[in-house]
Amino acid sequence: MPSPASVFRVFLTRWRSYKYRFVPWVALNLARNRRTLRHVPAGCRDKVIADAEVCSSLVAFFQHLFTSDITKQKELLSLLPSSTRAMYPAPDASHQQQCLQATLSANDIMYKSLGFSIDRQPSSLDAAGTGVFVSRGFVPKGALVSMYPGAVYQNYEPIFFQSIGNPFIFRCLDGILIDGNDKGISKSVYRSCSRRDQLGPLKMCDCTWLTSIPHNPLGVGQYVNNCSNERAANVCYQEFDVPDSFPVELRQYIPNVRYAHDVEGPLRCVVLVALRDIHCGEELFSNYFTLVQ
Image (cartoon, rainbow, N blue to C red; front, top):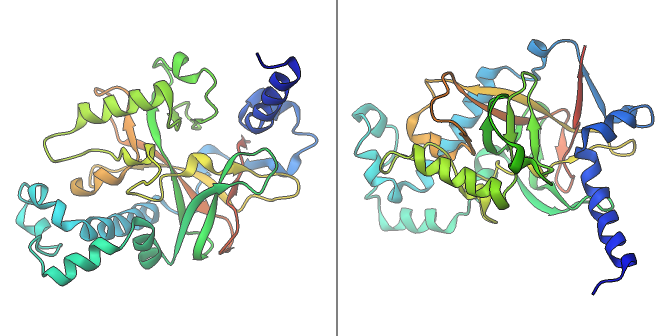
């Protein structure tokens, strides 16, 4: 049986990691941690880059992922209009091209198309658990760096059991919640909702962010740690509603799914955007607490 001292040490370690996601603690410590508070003049103006730019960045990157996996997309391509099929190489490409594509990982494709790649590694902050680092290349200011994955809940939908001991619930300005936990009940709920929305070979979301090797390497935003007085934020969250015009064949890379299938309107996503140039080896830090004035 573990001693009380060892139990307390385990609790203290977990608390040090969790406290930056516990809103009451953050609110009570704002006076001592002013640098960790982000001010925006109004919710409608909380945009670092335009939604059109976010959308075009996602489409361009997802098209690279889709093309690199074209041999496995044959059934899906057969269901798409000829104008859409013409945008991609034929699935029966040369053997040499197929071999080249097979050797490229998702992170390789990310580096080749975006000029940088990111990875989950132990955080440089004490007791902060896992963090996200720029592993290769260079991130320019204003670039889309990551996405916050998870099931999307309206503010009236049940999330009590999923929220117990869950440090990965993101609250949008309008009360919409995104559960980015890749374990436990949250994981089961996400997988269930993804299977519900799938239409034959057409997947409406990405489930691989629940694994250690996501097909969309952007989908690790829930592991970006909070900034501190010593480490200023270099990325910030930005809400993005996926438009109806978003290519249907690329929705399989979006790491978000609605909890309820009958919710009208666009799917809510949250992306992380670079506030400054970020160099290889740097850890990404965001602001967990945003004050809308």
